[in-house]
Image (cartoon, rainbow, N blue to C red; front, side):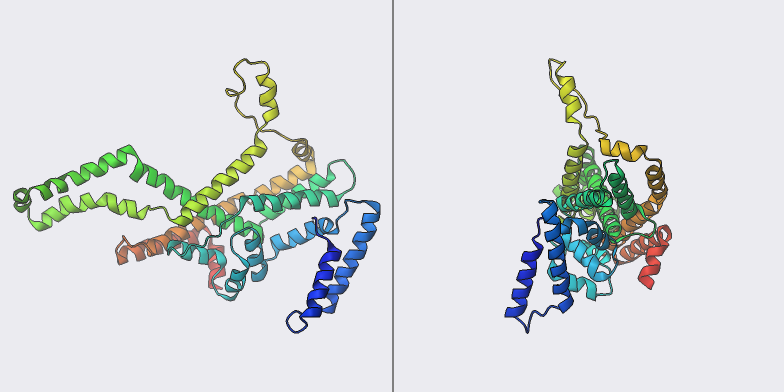
Length: 369
């Protein structure tokens, strides 16, 4: 959208002319670009707002969303803000998947400054839906919106998966992990009750440290077992549940996405209309989700409704994949924990990986292959 095909063609030709040794374009690229320019010129003679890129967007986006080649996956991750162009070759040349590499890097503190961009994700999905609707039909009976709904449901819920689906499942697992750790930290470290318990456990140790005579009465082994280890327990919990910079970015991204989606679902017109009849305004009126005419037409179409319901049967499979991702992240966190003893780290990591393999055996089979 907003791309001047002729201008792009001219730039490519000029770059190829000036840097023949470094920038060589296959002849068919220029032929295709010139054909596009001609077609766009014909379209502009009829509709001044015509853009051939807009007409091609559903195919290009669909191809990018579904192409499972390593380079296409890396390109989509870069467009969504999860990596940059310099990382594409690194991701596609290794034997480890980008998602698995991200888990390893995150738990080791090697966190990239890249994170999922809610704005870009919504922009791409909105464009895909609107352009699919616009190019699927020229009538006004809602067939375009129906086609877009089908394509979008297939992208997100299809049992065969898609690149976009894999990225969303991976990000959902990462967010679930970060959110769970954040909740546990609030309950077990930052809450008033947790602080009271921690203070109680440390009190005997503080008393012994202040009184050498009292400390000498207890044997070292007994003192370590009933005084020092319990007193050290809150610190261990604190370190196990510490918030990494990756966790902070994930929670911030989730908050941004929630705000963006919440703004779309909030029905301000209903609140405003009701507020006119109330002296104290609309502050006490809860937001009511707005069912747009587009959604109504989609829901009323029997064929589309049945198609979406059929795709919804794949939701349990997606849930299993997200659950397996949570356990795999827990396994890597356990293996790289500086607090746990080596034997405990290995056992916890092995248990979590085994549970993940049971929940989602397909993923383990892919890794083995």
